[in-house]
Image (cartoon, rainbow, N blue to C red; front, side, top):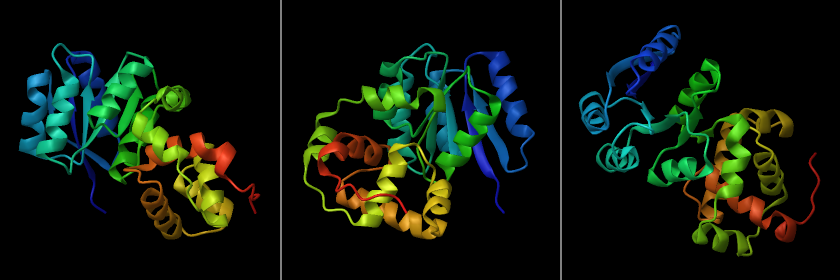
Length: 221
């Protein structure tokens, strides 16, 4: 099994060393390169092309612009924003810039590993204790229009969306509904198409806003 390659850019030397150490103890991950400034972000992404790039968004300079530049130049790289700043505005700005993960430095090291593995699988990840605040803080007009639209969902799709809104992972949804992981991923693709969503997070946000009025009240099995 191929290991997940990781790049790290953090201007705090001790933090950078600690992250390298945490990742180094996980046999599924490998660090390809590190940086200590915003100017290192795009260079590291283009030179090493890691699967996942961890970026400390509180560094001097415009880390959010750097994230956007990475996504535009090396779209295969998945960005995880990593910061002390537990502000909803910071999280939304990072996600809008193109990050698919947002992890607070106050989180356990195991949560950073979980975030790396999740975004490498193509999922979105927000620090568990902070996710509901970020989702509630999203006020994008496009998402409001998506949520207001009448979307015809099958009973199974409604069940999956209900579990998504509760924060369930794909594996938890599969176990709860007695489906295979592959089947759940297939339904996720359908839901993104129906809701005109780019990713899992947008499906959750749109579903939360439409849940009360649009769901037919089908109970979970």
